[in-house]
Amino acid sequence: MKKAIILGLGAFALAAQTANDGPQFTNNGHLTLPKDYRQWTFLSSGLGMTYGPAASADTANPSFDNVFVNPSSYRAFIETGRWPDKTMFVLEVRSATSHGSINNAGHYQNELRAIEAEVKDEKRFPQKWNFFAFGLKDTGNPLPADSACNSCHSQNGAADNTFVQFYPTLLEVAKKKNTLTPAYLQKSAAEAAGAK
Amino acid sequence: MKKAIILGLGAFALAAQTANDGPQFTNNGHLTLPKDYRQWTFLSSGLGMTYGPAASADTANPSFDNVFVNPSSYRAFIETGRWPDKTMFVLEVRSATSHGSINNAGHYQNELRAIEAEVKDEKRFPQKWNFFAFGLKDTGNPLPADSACNSCHSQNGAADNTFVQFYPTLLEVAKKKNTLTPAYLQKSAAEAAGAK
Image (cartoon, rainbow over all chains, first blue to last red; front, side, top):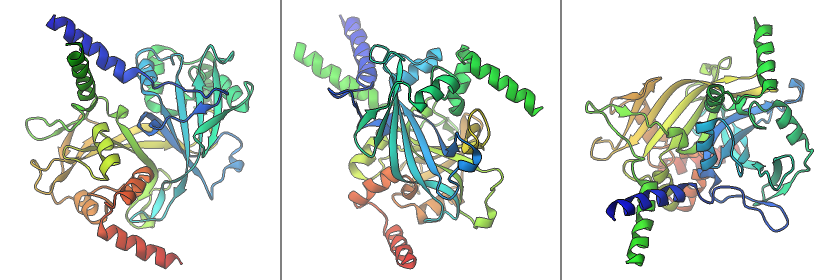
């Protein structure tokens, strides 16, 4: 009996850790911003990242971006190198400040500028993943299935529609689990050859 | 009996969430790097932050820094604006890359350069907080009680020996809970007056 209770306790604790950290939608298909997303697992941040031409970069007023993922999906990725259904990414965009307190150069993070999200829901979205724009609100508007976000992620994401190439700890996982896309591997090999 | 078991289960789940996320020391007083610190709560990141003169900034080769704190202490700070005993911060320093994959300008994170930590342990350290340098190892060497880290943090940290002024979400909490230090408030007021 004692053993059964202890086993039950363990299962309950595990369930408590994994439950309810996936995407929640409103009745009209908008995405709810999780109140605790800042306690989700951090993947990486960048400053002034620019996917268009370098000349289009806003060097005078760059933004930080912080990427968080729901913790149960993070643990699944560490084990498998793949994102399970109901994975949700939150991208937080913040302004950058250079001078303040004892900081005299470089940049640190300041006000929230916008929030975006990427969700994997295989039943809800024929293309499996979809994107949402929150701005500064707590519900996110769905982007069209053929949005620029989705086409760029599906063509260039290193693993399963996501930019794992910009998350250094996950890139190592995907390498080990052989889950990097053929397109990413081919492009990386070409870049490495060009750099020689 | 059923009710007692359910209550027990709830308490167990709560304990599972909060236990064992504080600092662990070796017998000789070195600090152990938590294997799961990347699943701790992220506070913020900076790029090329420079506390000395601006001219000393390494603009050609800046580093990102990511700050994580143990989750139970994060939750306590959200409630109180103060850090409980056994709080532990991990500072991760990473190289910055500009050109790679589809990124053409700005910076994203790359290799780990070093890890440092700050720990609050009121019994172990007469000055309450101490600092540890890990380099790329999984145990951290304690810095002297009067290290430059500690004197700078105690003089300039916006709340309780920590640079809450660089963690935008926690700065709001400390303002609401009135836990910003008098020195920080005085300096901020002087800076704001100077900027007018």
